[in-house]
Image (cartoon, rainbow, N blue to C red; front, side, top):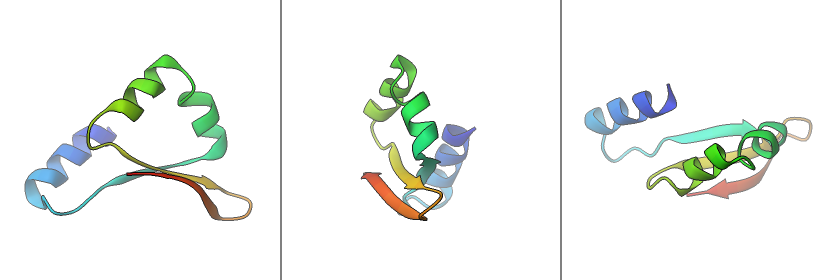
Length: 62
């Protein structure tokens, strides 16, 4: 769903950058798997990892 939205947004507002925000738990679960690693290597994929308890950004991938 994220990539569909990203492609649609890119056509309508090409200068806007879309970030996927996930909690540390989701990041440690999903992005340590092979499928998650493929997403991280995808050109133009931007990610923010946050700690929901402290409400802090712990990782930022542009």
